[in-house]
Length: 111
Image 1 (spheres, helix red, strand yellow):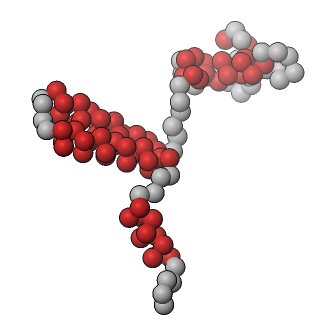
Image 2: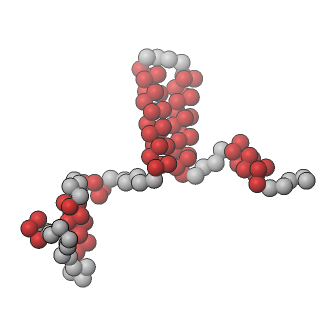
Image 3: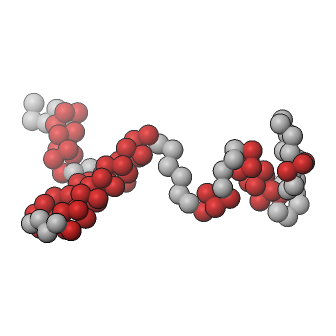
């Protein structure tokens, strides 16, 4: 969709004609001044997920640095476990200790 057809308030597009979805996507990207290839990349909008991905990245960088300076494997393993844990937070995986804590906090067992 040529830029001259996009006004400040309207984006002319047809959902009936083939290519209408692509036209509106391109128009929105142009309006927001975003690159076209952003559509093919994953988009993370949840603040909790962003924080978890940042923790994961930091842990992976630490593991890589530990590997480069030849620290013991226990340090590298610890960083990799932290990275995996951050990803598990996004996926909703609940560690066993946390699961047991939730059960005992929320249910009256043996009372």
